[in-house]
Length: 143
Length: 107
Image (tube, rainbow over all chains, first blue to last red; front, side, top):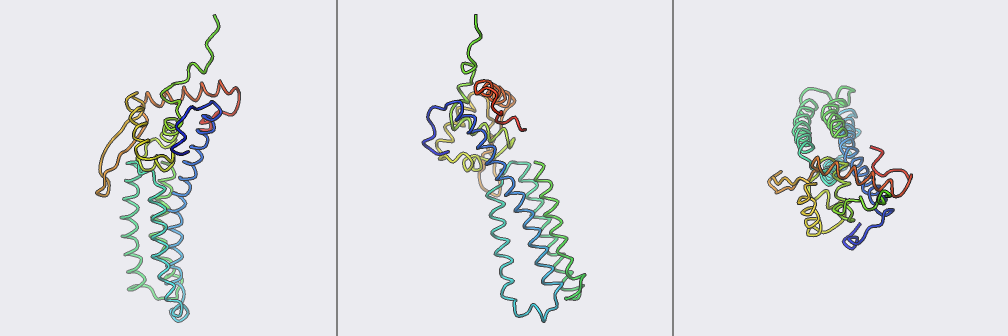
């Protein structure tokens, strides 16, 4: 499919074009919903590592924590690019963004002020923002 | 008198590579912004605009302009007439290619 494809269309080509477009849309949707799920999984893993593993163990690897925002950035770009940006989808995306930010702040506060690092409980607050992502992925998958 | 060959029933408005692709995208997604359709169909802005205008004039595609995140967005969707015309086009196409698995019939 390109600019030169604007000529006559035979019937088999028309049928294959429809199939091709449907496959592309389907692939795009899988990338889209998959990216939202990935955002949840990455967030869950981040909090599990930062909270669940004792500080002394993770301290030498602190520099690797920069990978978290970098990964978030690329996943967010993937989500934006694969989105149909339909109005209903944009509404869910806005809820996802707002819910994710609030849940991240709450999870961060729990990690810093309430839970002791290196305990199982401290590994769990990531479930809050991850849960927002999984709920959004479910809602977006139905659209 | 014999019934005319099904190819004579193919909607000429839809029966163009770009317009068919646009209709197929919108039939699958229900609504999408211009950029998304452009990415899927892989055509230039101007060519897509030209074909969307043809579909809009035929009453097949609804165009809604708005703003999202402080940037202008053009949302495209099929009208009822457009959806019915696309379904009829696919049915006719399936009759022509005779018994092959129908594109779009999986939905």
